Image (tube, each protein chain N blue to C red):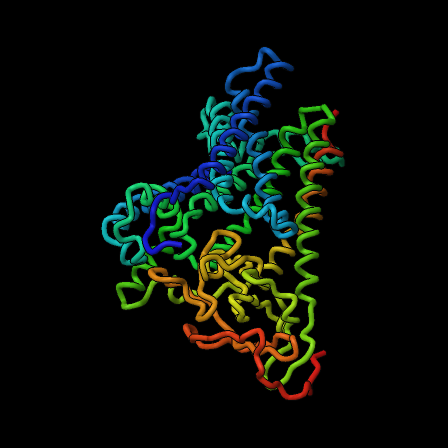
Length: 114
Length: 365
């Protein structure tokens, strides 16, 4: 188990290192291409989005690549939000939470050692 | 809404909001650290930090989870929704401090990598079943907390509008629904961790009360939403659906109506009635619960603006919502269910519109 966890941690570290390198490149050349509204944005804006850039870098790399191939940024192509679909999913999550969470807590309390 | 990004667009409301948030966090930390010190004077600083940040973060999470349904149930809570993302980021930072201190305190002193230890510390001595009985003691509870922290990190890291725009509203919303999964994981983390050693009934009782408040508010809000969705279209005529009476519309305020299974927002503004989509392009806020300010439809959640006539945001902004044709006959508002092409200018219907609708010939079931 420890070896498996070690391997997983090395993979995660590699992913984040690649994300950090991507973030440098993205801030230098990509952010204003992926989203024109980011052109001229201040340093604090860049600080705020950096953790997300490092964590979600494959997604932004995909958007950047699509832009260089003549595509448009997501804001223009995004379909309007399906409010009803989200409401359904929200309701389902709440009902699952209402059932599963008390079961887990009850199990932890009922079987806790004396 | 903005045509270019800033770090945070500060205004008076945000300053008041964040000031209150800071006061709440400091009060929470002082209270819980003080109580811990009072009941156990020999406690270490690390333990104080671990307990103080965890309980304050948990309290904050309950506040965050209650704001949404409260705002759906009573418009007076809408101001709390305005800057909720700062609550979320603060809660994540408190949880992060808790996680780092706990990792150092309990897992950094051995030969194993602390992160590996957090997942495997119980590998040698833990068995779920011992002599045919469930063995809950020393159940590995850390993974629940780490998983919740990862979810909260992704939510905090994508809280800026840059992410809303570039992930897309639907994807962003789905990601942020993860807060309910994180809440469930945190409850399990607390129940299988702290509650195993804390014998006072106060802790499980407080956890149960918090959970019941959160779930009750959400179920009440869901019930209200479901009742609105069940609303039927009264009648159809000439491609228009009977939506409501003109008298039900107040000047300068929106009203949400169900038109052929879809929520639309109706507006009465300067003697004319307009119909638009009910979904804000920002975070999907219910536009029909907003009002018209300076001639623009204003979303009740974060104040995004749209002109009622063509659904476009005023320049230099570029967001657009759909508009629908409207007619008025005999004091009833009739709306075309099919939206106009985006940017179509729509004059609205004067409240005293003489337009004739043929006799009602189709009642929807």
